[in-house]
Figure 1 (cartoon, each protein chain N blue to C red):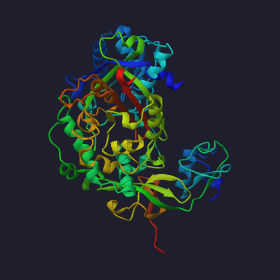
Figure 2: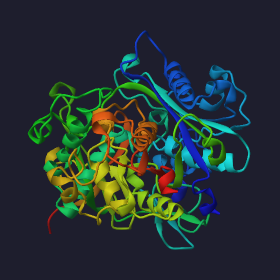
Figure 3: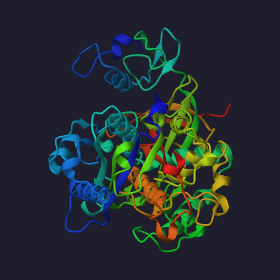
Figure 4: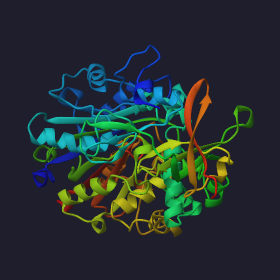
Length: 386
Length: 137
């Protein structure tokens, strides 16, 4: 059955809005709607065409009904499955399922946040979840969790703070080539190491930004995609896995459920890591891409630190990762997953300007939710990859 | 400490849910975790059924209190707000892990692999389970 989904649906529009600092007191749902309309315009479609709704939100407890009301649509299929920042990547899979089953014809995936201008810090629904066995110790959500994972990775595998810093430096080099990125000034490994420690071993430069921003993607069935104005970007494979919610119950802090989501996505796509031209890995913290490169099979467990060293994932390196600058330098409005999709689609359409990965036919998007909790992997490709 | 004694909340109600039971016990100075009578595994955090086998036949047991630091971090904080503090994941010898804090050693000096022992503190008028370096024998 999973093979029947391969190539059955395509992203035909993407949009961004309110990046960095959204002007004029725009709310989270304003930004989400602006991104949605931008994606629909990109697809040559109207909001009137949308009958499948896949929103996620850090602000709305009931994003399905809130976003449908705001946009003025009555969806025939609606799924606001909330697994944190992994949700939009997961929604690619659910949208493909709904499209394939005929439950909707035009699926809209969207996210938006005004956390920077409204609060100046992370705003997330998950902060209000009861965690009586963690909260009394005052972990700073979510950075303590990632610091614990990074510390364990360093202990088990000899990963160094310099190797963590390589991830931030690579992201910044990509961001320097992306006019839409929030932070573009040069960043050195020494800059990262000498920045303020927030949660050892992570400094403020090992952490994602706190920005506003929204993103959206429009999906239709492959047969309809061929008639759209944009070159379709097909969903070749996707899978989601989650093994824990709270970091204290993550038994092995160095192996994430991306091992399962990656295996599932590659199996559906009939591809292996060597077939992927460009990667978008949810980099909430510098340890993330290291863990995901290992768990997704781009290197062996424990070798992620050495793998990213010497600029391998930076511009000019052998494996382009987070070509928009990532959550570390492009922007991180509370949840970053949707931006992995937007950047992958633009790369596959050849629209990425100075940072374009030449001839990219396949892209891997990886979403991460909560504290390494939910993992969603999607593999996208051009018609040549079908 | 018998189960009977801790199996009541502040209003004297018995038949407590897992969280209420755990914290009622902690308030009585008892650190208790669950044990599955069917698959014989320990369980933490407390819940109504075993996450390993689904059994609802769970017992509250007193763990040894001995554990090992599985990972550790310290959060930086201004001195006037209390200074840096430790957050750790502790693996109990019973094979469960939990978030906690290691006291009696500087936050940055807590090390992965360190042997630790549970202690109950009163903090903000509430009992809090923390760990301390195990006494070298």
